[in-house]
Image (cartoon, rainbow, N blue to C red; front, side):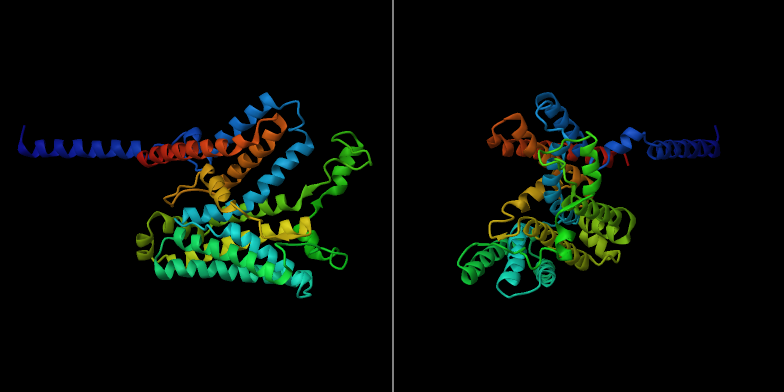
Length: 382
C-alpha cells in the first residue's frame, strides 16, 4: 500500500473514532436517566420511602386524614420558607447560620414596635423587614470584603443577633416574651390576613357539610382552610425555581458556586450575587418570623432556635451539595416535606420522639451519599 493510502486510512480511522465517541457522548438519555440526574431525585425517593413507611405503620391513626395532612404541610411550610433561601445560598457555595437568630430578632422588632413604641402593625412589620434585610446585606458584604468563610461570619452573627434579641427585650420589657402583639386595635389589619389565617374557608366548610372531610362538634370543618404559610411556601419556592432555571441571575448563582474565579472572569458579578442571596436569606427569615408572630400573637427570644441547621438539613436532603454549584429550590421543598412528615408521623405512630433527630441524621447522610453518587454519574456521562 502506498504512503498516501496509508495516511488516508489513518485519517479515516481517526474520523470514525471521533464520530463514534461524539455519537456516544451526544446520545439522547432516557427519561429515567434525566430524572435521576436531577438534584431533587434523592429527596423524591426519600419522600416515597417515608410515606410508604407511615402508610404501613400509621394508616389507621388519622395521619392521612385531611386534618393530619394539613398539619404535615403546615410544619413543612414553616421550615420550607427558610430552606428555599438556604438552598440558593448553598448552590452559590455559601452558608447563613444567622437565620435562626434573625427569626427571633425580627419577631421582637415587630413586638417591641407595636407594644412599646406604639407603631401601627404594618409599620412594625415593614421595619422588621428593612432591619433584617440590612443585616443580611451586611453579612454578605463582610463575606465579600473580608474573604472569610461565610460559615464563620454568620456564626458570629448568629450569636450577636441572639444576644441582642435577649438583652434588648429584657431591657425594655423585663421579660423574654412579648404578648398581645396582635390585639383588638390591629386584629383587622390587612397584614394579619396577609401573613396569618386560612384561605378558601368557605370551600372547606362546604366539603365538611357534604361529608367529604370531618366536621367538629360546633359545626365547623376540622380543616378551616389552607394556612397562609403554605401559600407563601409554594410562592417562594416557585419564584426561586423560576429564577434558577429561567433567568441570567440563576445562571450566575450556579456559576458562583461552581467556580467563583472562572465566573468572575466571565463577567459574573460574584460579589453582588452573594450579597443579594444573603439579603434574600434575611427576607425569608423575617417572613417566617412575621407568620409566627401574627399567628400566635406574641414574640419570643427562643423562636428560631436550630432553624439554621434544620434549613441546611432540608436543603441537603433536597439535593444541594455542601461544595456548591448543584441543587434546586424544589428539592428543598421535598426536604422540608420529609422533615414535616416525620415530625408529625412519629406522633401518630407513637414512636418515641427522641428518635426524630436520629432519623434526620440518617436521612442527611443517605442524601449526601446519594447526591454525590448521582453527581458523579452525571459528570461521567458528559
